[in-house]
Length: 139
Image 1 (cartoon, rainbow, N blue to C red):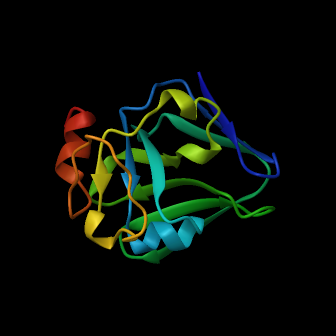
Image 2: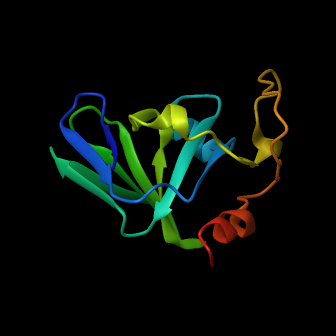
Image 3: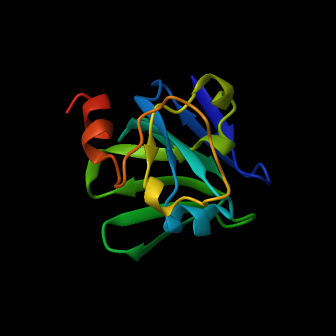
């Protein structure tokens, strides 16, 4: 069982399935969403993640991108992307098991902060990495 919660603890996140993969994202959208210079997400099968407890808001500011947040504290809880229809993405920062979910890819590296250097041997792509992420889902 994978578990997590929002900052205020009102919303619980659960998945009975392990993540299919996890990834860093350097895009402007994710940076603005989290306020961090880079984000990391775990990809789960679309129906594997459930949210329970406190109220959740659902927003879509860009066509094909849906995001869920805790209405009490604003924590990002999950996201879905039209170009990855069979997956749900959960920010690693809200998951209890995040230390065991090391990312395997860097996406949107051209949008990254030039002063943030993550030295690893992971593949780096200039786009969403959808082909790699779909492959991880077995599509």
